[in-house]
Length: 400
Image (cartoon, rainbow, N blue to C red; front, side):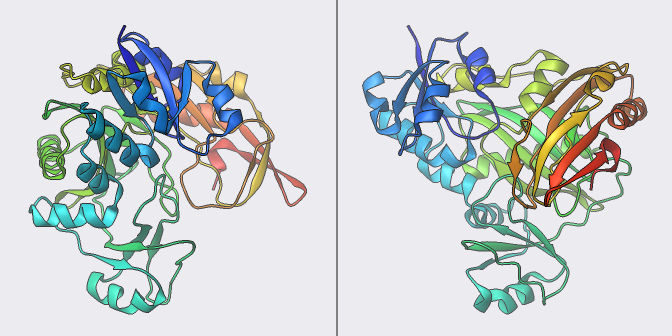
């Protein structure tokens, strides 16, 4: 029996998605990084055998993979030691270190974006002089836009938490109203062969860089689709990606597509969109690639617009007491599903990162119709927060 080991941690696929996609290929076991949390182990144990990460070897796995950004390097070390398909340790560093990734993409002449490393306040003036303003400040290692800020003034020095940080040129997008001025490319790589499943359209960001979901197909200008895929393919080759999924974020600028970053993993909520829109399970494809099987896919060309919209957490700290109007939102024509991501009465600290509270899924005849469906559904919802001991009600279409 084929045995697949998933290095499990917080990531872009939940346990049910992983088990559903990979159990078609064999027996699934889960490796947890040490120290192993007993409560997490009990939860994961409902889906398969659980071992500590150092004990993976005794399972004699046929494949090892992860859907967690923070476990890419550990997984690469495992596959390298066991002689299994996966990212090399060097590629895993390039995919998780924004400083190293920019340097490699510049050296390979894939895309030249001004950037500078900031270890602390002593580096600030020199970094601003090298990069210019406006600029984006982000941790060298991070996910979900955590601690990521738009810097408009040299007086802004939000170096909160552990460094180092990267200060990058802010890529100004072209007018994409009413949609976001960036897209992502969902790719599968097996035996070094790159297949692009789709270019994913985005809703406009909320400040500073909080994402609100995505849709297929994206709205692009003539020639943009080909240029986006060409840029993505060159980036993946430059970074040495030979096995697994890739989620590449691209800015649509007046001068053409530019690279925001390349992620060596599944994009958040992308598998749910892929299954709904095309019946393609990206978790299963990731498993096939990790087993050394061919995992090519044909580009998705849906005849309707499929979307998945998230209400991001507000940047202030809160306890989510209730979401009203869910039944009414589900009855809106075009809405095919709604689920909570933040559980009832969960407490969230103040943060600027992307933290979806829910997922509102649907389909529409066209992009304009998608906007109408979402407007109707969001007006049905009311989020009730407890902030500082007081209850605050905010309609879904008025969230900050």
